[in-house]
Amino acid sequence: MLLTRASEYALLALDIIRNADKPKGAEQLSIELSIPKSFLAKILQGLAKEGILESKKGAHGGFVLVKKSSEISIASIVIAAEGKTPAVFDCSQYSTTCPNGSIGSCTISPFLVTFQTKIDTFLQKLTLEDIFK
Amino acid sequence: MLLTRASEYALLALDIIRNADKPKGAEQLSIELSIPKSFLAKILQGLAKEGILESKKGAHGGFVLVKKSSEISIASIVIAAEGKTPAVFDCSQYSTTCPNGSIGSCTISPFLVTFQTKIDTFLQKLTLEDIFK
DNA sequence: TATAAATTAGAGTAAAATAGTCCTAATTAG
DNA sequence: CTAATTAGGACTATTTTACTCTAATTTATA
Image 1 (tube, each protein chain N blue to C red):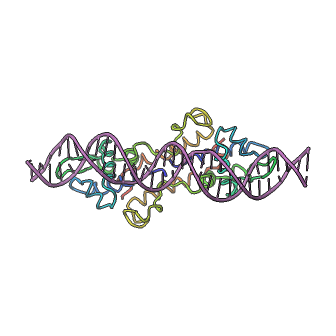
Image 2 (cartoon, rainbow over the protein chains, first blue to last red):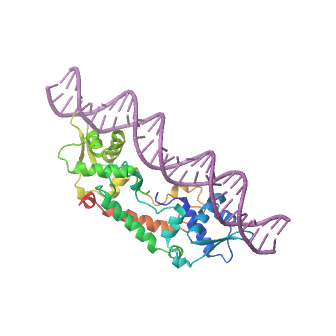
Image 3 (cartoon, each protein chain N blue to C red):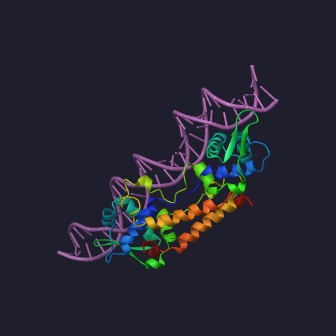
């Protein structure tokens, strides 16, 4: 799987947050979406760190969108949620054990790079607004 | 990750097999590629079952290509190697616990379907010949 | 026909990634 | 002050990935 539940929960939560007029708390969101609160809270924290959401602490706090939906790429959401860019195949991680030696010299490397670029481009061009309209 | 080592090993092995004039054994391939023999053997068995390779048992046996490289899609190789089609996000697996109920009614479903289709199409159009030329 | 070289099949295992939980601290509206 | 809320870190459970091992089967060839 390219995307994990973190991305799924992030996108579902963002759709609710962008349609709300007040800050949405993690607990409220977890109830509306029927997903685990602590896990969702972690994901929302990640989105806040990346500047996709603004978090308001304390009573009546919660999360609000900082930018317009049309200015938030799906790529940035996924990277914030997953903690890394979604990779077709994680060569670098295995570089020391790579059968073909260093990265880039492998016979399938051109294919992998082309594929990865296709995915990156697709996610970078798509915005939060696009996927919900 | 969308693709696992099974697909990587399958593609690397197929590149050697298609350039050989005799059946290539799992052991020989595992040596040339510096990858575990038993694991590679399992993957080659899968490719043989899907009709991508023909396996010859016994002495001087091994694996040979059945079709031309240009007639073998990367999609078919990946499906044979992974045992399933590479999924962007595995909704069906979570259908019983899906926050939004049944598949397709989820707000991110259209995005997921579009994304998955893009990937499927890309892999179906690409052939073994394409990625090594 | 014996034998060595292969694939086949299935069960089992180890490591890594995913999907969480839990607890304590810090912040803030009212 | 206090109740509501985010922040952070450590921890755990589950699932997937990446293998291994053993025994059975097949087959070229001597």
